[in-house]
Length: 179
View 1 (cartoon, rainbow, N blue to C red):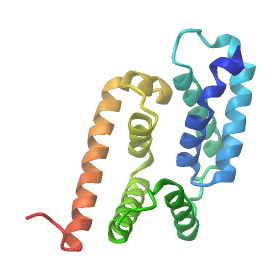
View 2 (view 1 turned 90 degrees about the vertical axis):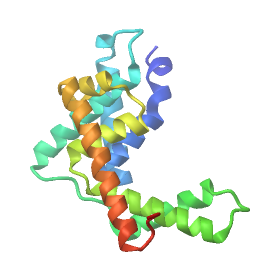
View 3 (view 1 turned 45 degrees about the horizontal axis):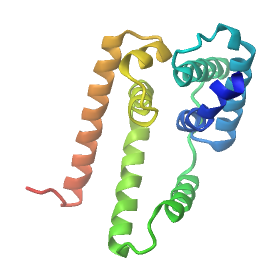
View 4 (view 1 turned 135 degrees about the vertical axis):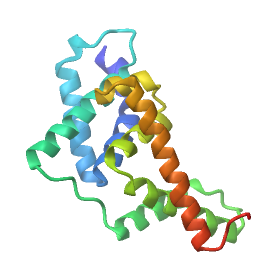
């Protein structure tokens, strides 16, 4: 039963772990801890509820506990590692017949967005990842992060405003505004 209900969500849980840790080895360790804990306590899962949200709750709790144990934030990946991962992903994701200028502009924009997203305080970055990448609803996010629903709504709104402001500032500094 566990295999049928929980394991289809491994990719989503790994993606969230990678966003939290910024390091594939740490993300794999966090994923393994999460799946082991989920398997161990699967009898507490309510069949018919959102298993992905339940797994993400375990993931976030494991991450928080690890951070507390280490009493410092997880180290972010180096710029070189990020560039390598972005290049590798782009080779897989980009259609082969795109305009080279368009490809470069798209990659640069994606890198700028990634930098802006990673520069957000963690409480704002977390909610954006859960709502926009993991596609959880606000109540599920409130349950995963163990915060009030209103706080989730506020953080999503503020995070999106921070991203808009930072991306606009970057565009203005490059002289690329539509005004």
